[in-house]
Structures are given as C-alpha cells and as structure tokens.
Image (cartoon, rainbow, N blue to C red; front, side, top):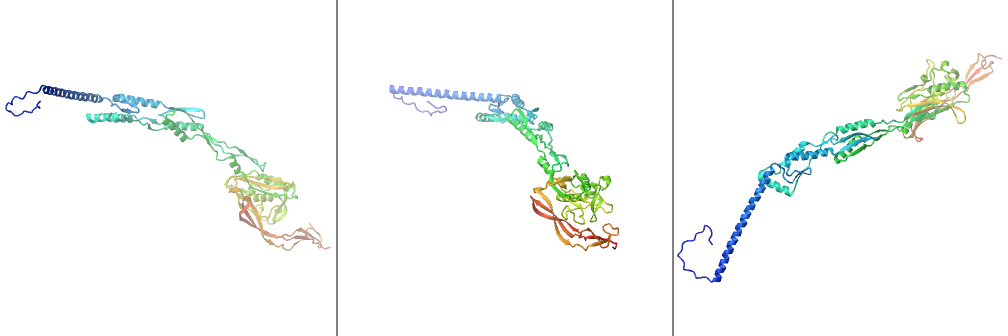
Length: 507
C-alpha cells in the first residue's frame, strides 16, 4: 500500500519473484483485509465525531440565539426562577411577588381595650423601590447578554455550577403615619397625675389641723417604645394585634411629701398666771383670734401690730393689767404682751427671720429672760414684733389658749411648714452674763394720803430687784443633739429700787 503523494523512482523490471508458499499467501491476504477494515472503521469514527461536533455546535448556537430574548437558566430573584422568561415576564413575576409581600402584613394598634387603627407596610414607612427592582433585573439580564458568544458560553457554564441569586431589600421611608397614630392615642389616654396636697387647714384642731387629698397616678404611653415594637413586628412580618401598654406617671408630691410640707416646725407655750383675770385672759384670746389660722407665704412679712389691730374697745379689747414703762398698770389690751412673747419664741424656733423685737424693761414671769417680746401701739411709742418667712415654703400658724395637763391655762403657738432635713430643730438657750445690783430705795411722799397719812408711816409700793444682762442663743439640733448655736440677742433688764411712800402729816 502506498502513501498518498508519494512516487517511487523507475527501476528495471524485476525478475519474476518466486512463487510464494500457499499458506503464506493466505496470511498476507488476511492482513490486507484487516488493514482495509481498520482504515474504514477509523474513517467512520472520525466522520461520526465530526458530525457530532457539528451537531453540538449547532445546538449551542441555537440556545445562544434563543437566549437573546430571555434570561439564562440558573438566574433567581427573590427565589423566582427567571430562566426562559423575557424581561417583561420577569418584571411582572417579581412585581407580583412584591405586591403580595406588601399586602401580606397588617397590624391592629390598640390601647386600653380600644382598637385605634390598622396599619400595613406603607403606614410603617416600609416599601419597595421599583427602581431597585429594575436595577436588579438589569444586572441579572447582563449575565449571558454581554460580550458575545464566548462570554455567553462562559456565563452559562458558571450558572450551571452555581446559580445567581438576587434579593430585593425593602426601603425605609417616613413612618409619620404611625407617629401620628401614636400621638392621637397618647392624647386620648393621657391623664395628668395629681399631687397629694393640703385639702383643708382647720386651726380649731390645733394639733392636727390638716386634711389631705390623696395623690392620683397619671397615665400615658411610651410612644418611642411603641413605635419600635410596631416596626419590629413589621420587619418580622408578625401580623395581628398590638395592645400598647399604659405607663403610669407618678405624682411629684406623695402623701408623705404633703405631710412633710406641713410638719410641726415649732411650738411655744407660756403659762397664764393663776392671778390673771378673766378680762386679761379675754384680751389674750382676742389677740390670738387675729393670729390663729394665718398662712404666710415664703418671703411674706408678719407684723404683730398690724395683725392684731389697735388695742381698743372697738376692736374687742378691755382694760386689764399690762406692762407700761416697767410698771404694771391698767391699760386697754392688758395681757397682749404674753401673746407677742409666746409668738416670738415659736417664730424663732420655726426659723423665721426676726426683723423687729424689743424685750421688756424688766423680767416677766411667764418666760425665761431674753426670750420675751413686748409690744405697744401708742402713737409715738410704737413697739412691734415683726418677722419674715424665709423657710422657702408656706407656713401655717395656730395660736390660742389651751389647758395644761394640770388644768391651768396656757398660751400655745404652733408653726407648721416644710420639715427641716435630718430631723433638725431649733431651741432657745439664755444665759445671764451679768447681774446688776439693786439701787437704793426710793422714798416718795404720799401727799394725797393714798397709802399713808403720818410722817412715821411708810408703805412699800414695789420691791427692789436685781438687773441682768442676758445673752440668748438659737441652738441648731439634730435628733435632739446640739450641733451649733447662734447669738440672737443681748438684753439688759434694769435693776430696780424698792419704792416706798411716807406720810407728810405730823402726829
């Protein structure tokens, strides 16, 4: 057998070859037949392979041409297979899924047993951006549609190994509708808290003069917390009903606070002498009636003379013994100085700022030295007791005549107001720093024979008494223990000589 294209050089005619053995000839013939068959098979196989390759290429070409109008297999958006769909068909399929999702969630918003509204994703400010959908589909469409046939084959092979998954993310816009609904609910359910307060001040019940209104808790809703819960349910697709819990609003002033605001700040009492007449006691009662039940606002000023009024018969006062220039004499309104003294002592211990106070010129029997306060309303000789409320809050005063446990009468003044911190209280402490000697007796002639007539007769009008210089301190105490003290006054009570009258007529 000769190769194509190959030509051997010319030769002489060979001698006739020897005739081969018959068996050998048969073997040679079989080999020739086998070679012919083998070559024929190879040609058939090669032809088949070429035909197959041609046929496969044609199928890929046909798939490529068909894909020009549809998405490739293996492309998914939000779980929807877009393979074989046109762009418009894919848009419709994805849009339908989005609309189903938007309509799939709703939530009833209720509060205090009433349903106010039903909201959906739009109300929650959650929506889908259709421009985002278009952008996502455009990206998916670019797979297998960009770069020609070779790129198509590469994209198709890649999708066969791993599918393309695209997801649409919901966009958040304004949740103003929910905020508006919550505002309406808040306004509807709101109830303002009511502080505990003094309902009435009855000075007739001097020890417990107050009644109180109980505090009332208010209510509202936590709008921010409610909004967050609604958006959480929207994000998780949890439909149903949401009952917004009510939130209590505590009053600023509890009953305990209200009682603290009218705690007993101070009480002062002075015993009424058993020798005090009913008229004198009546004058005391008239003055106390002007003071009892007074309410002093913070920074308000109290004036004794203005409050109790002029001591006159027209104002209910009567003639009784009272101190005038150190002497006990009959005056209209006698006894009122015991009222001013008791009030002064209580005002000091209640923390009032004393702006005007004058001691008696001589000791009085019903209070310690340095703790008294005289008053006078005579024109040109006015003496007032005045103080200002500097406690920072309202002050209530009760004042009157009360019985002692032993049955005697006493003047009692109480101040009520904002309790001082740490159970703090004030008390007075007076100290005699100097004693003044009794002067020589004073002898007066009884020309009118009021006490005695003859020269050898002598009548004692008043006894002599020592004088004193007294320092008074206001002590600041915590739980009854003195922490500090402040000097508030240095008072001098003059020494007094004994006064005698002698007669002027010889025997």
